[in-house]
Image (cartoon, rainbow, N blue to C red; front, side):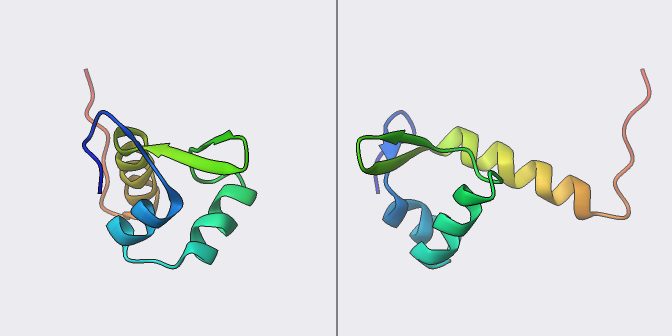
Length: 69
């Protein structure tokens, strides 16, 4: 896998999340996963994938309570 600063391919994200390439493509098609298409390839930034995962976890967690200022 590439470093945090570089772009990841579908295969890299699949390995990172332990899901198939088909699952990654399905998430892209439904506009759930942040990705950039360059030519025929989909590319990802690890930071954006991690932020996306955090947002899903917060939405699904019944115990998530936002801090009040």
